[in-house]
Every structure is written in C-alpha cells, then in structure tokens.
Amino acid sequence: MSKTRAKTQPKPILNASLPPQFRQVRVALAREPGHPEGDADIAYIIVAPLDSEDRIDAELWREYRDACRIVRQRPDAQDKHGHLVHQPGGGWAFHYDGETDLTDEVGFHFADERFVVGEYVSINEGGKMHTYRVATVSYL
Image 1 (spheres, one colour):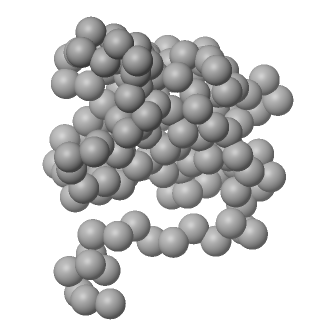
Image 2 (cartoon, rainbow, N blue to C red):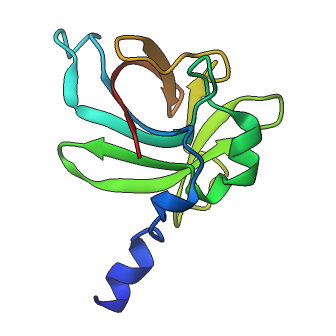
C-alpha cells in the first residue's frame, strides 16, 4: 500500500471488538427539487451504536467514538471518510478526516431520530437542508 493511500484511508475497525448495538446505516437522498425520484447515489453510510429505540446511543458513542464513522458518497466525487461527532447540547455532526473545520455537515435533530428502514432524516449541508431516507440498517 502506498504511503499516500495509507494516510487517506481510515484505520480499520475490528468488528469483533465492538458491542452488538453497532449498526451500519445507509441513508440516501429522498425526493427534492432537482431529484424528483430521490437519488440512491447521493448517500451517507453511518457506523454507530443504536439503542433499543433505534436512536444513536450517546453513551456507547463516548466509549467507542473512534469506531463511529461516516462515509459521504457522491456519484461525481471520491468518497469522503470521517467521524460522527457529538456536539454540545446533544446534536450530531460529521467531521471529515483531514479537514480543519470542526464539522462539515450536521444531522438535524439526530438525537431524536430513529434509524429504521423507511424513516426520514435531515442533514444540513453547507447551510442547506436535505432530506434522506434510511435505506438499510445492518449489523456489523
């Protein structure tokens, strides 16, 4: 593996070392102007622990924060890898590896959202709100 690639790829997660509450959640862009059918290629993959009500478990996040990852997928760009960040006041945001800003995108009311297939969540991207639909939820 080249040194450049090693610096840009996140450290692998050893799934066996994580609690069973960890899930991989994929959310895809829902219908909006410019995307009347939504767009499955505009998506986020979130790796995080979910509680018994399918909400992000802040307590487990604190203990395993390095394992709580984000991948931003766009059809015309390379995937961006980062981490799920718990903000003061209980909000959740995404911070991408190698970027200097504290956060890049913010989950709107993620603390209250249930990550269940078919549910909708909103993400503030650069000051503009977009709605995503939970497409898949799977065990690690």
